[in-house]
Image 1 (cartoon, rainbow, N blue to C red):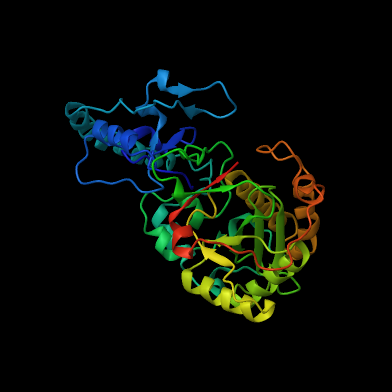
Image 2 (image 1 turned 90 degrees about the vertical axis):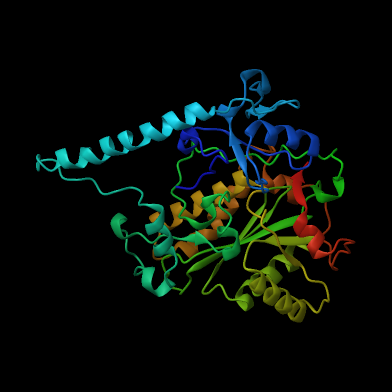
Length: 381
């Protein structure tokens, strides 16, 4: 199952109800205190490195709002000493042996049949997901839960090499709803380097593009879902696709732009070579010279709640309508956009379509290079 892993590798970081906090990368003084208390040499946190709530004293935690956050002066202080680490290492083998002895006793009573495993080991998951679509796909209409097809968001393989990167980017999406992801709202825009923070403060300004699949093939031959999300209004556009090739992706992006106008740019975590080909297709089809899609690893973490809503919607579609989920997709997406969003407390339809905004019919100018955008963090205001 996908979740963040505590950078300190503590025992409780594998629990589903643990809260995580990112390192203050945009506040050098504060970051220095965090790393000093950890007492780790030759280690530098990445954008996706996190510490769990167990390392912070209660006086540093703010529980008054809807979400549990850290106070401005919060610094992790609760770390085990060297003696505690040695005790944990000696106790670790004992706990693993006890767990392995349980299945042995279960064999004696054959009246209770063994339950099928809900989740397999990580190695088995990765090997299954690395197969070609033809090896993992099931026939349309197959609703056998034991043979249900696992799908994923197609991302750059380089992102998976980051140890602290959230594993929900390369797993299936039957994830329990009680898992809490590390927040992105702890970015300090008043830091010494504000140029590395990009604010999203208007509808249809910055979008996120994802491709999900392969899904059970429908009668119309569709196996993938392209989603385009507006980070500000939370509006979602979704289109079924027969393949995830750049021409197919570009074709549907053109349709979205023709209807809603040009955004500033579109973020995507697809492989960089695929993003390059998509931009080339968009330039040919739209007759523009601007590269509209930017490869960015924060594509999915800018708006985690909407991502989870889309994942849940896709799961419901393939479970209820495996043979023709593409027929029900438009109604599902429109229903999603007409419900009040928990972040904005507003319906995406109202935020985007009822404000009297005119679609921008020409590419928007931007004084930032793609390399500068990739180095920046996005914050929705």
